[in-house]
Length: 301
Image 1 (tube, helix red, strand yellow):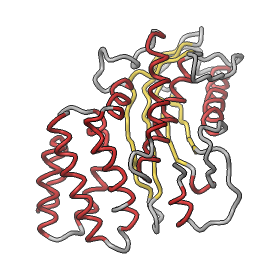
Image 2: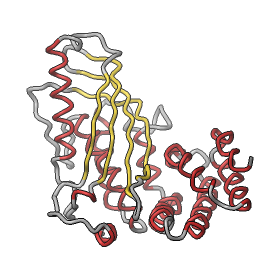
Image 3: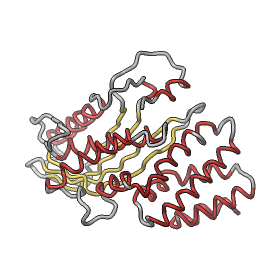
Image 4: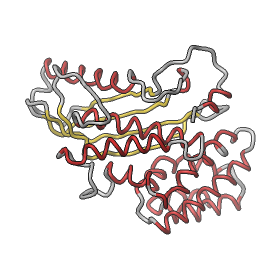
């Protein structure tokens, strides 16, 4: 499904571009002590950052046309923990994906996720080649996986289950990489791994959550400036739907990631509501996201 909804109400001029993602990649190398602090090492990291950014931003991921202002903004921040002279790197990645909100300058965070096993091999002389039907290397698999996740969540937020095909493509990348020997692609070990992120997005029992992304963003945030009371009502409905999902999948990664991304936003939204709305919001949020209950309590003080 084309993101025609955004195009209809973003009345900017300009030529449609092929690329869909505007990704910013930050590399933090303070923790590693190989040759990376030398001038040559810094050149390697500078080249790595450029090549990774070009891989995501320069590739056409869909057949749809995106204007510059429609591009999906994604930030990937890598904190390197280990590096070898052979080009093997261990890092932790923080991925954030954003969605613009109609009739405002505000961007809502679609996903805030920490990947604790962002490991790969990079050699400057080897170009990044990606084929989604064959495993090539872990770096291209990682970048493609998160690009498809960004597309999936963005399209879901503009149409119910609009991200289906991108979820399938992210799953295909993960499936091809399962036997690569790199961590994070299989179901063993970390319960917050990439495997569980894509498994949750494919899980039929979690469909109400994915459909709620559309209601939350398209039917609530996009109309919040004109209809704040109805928007809060719609968001309360989404939260109650999520409560039903949590009863089936109490430890679902996507639910935890949702509240990691949205907790501050939800507090801001309901802080402007009436006493009944604030109380309802506090009750459901403290139940669904108990680790942040103290933060939500400000709604009823």
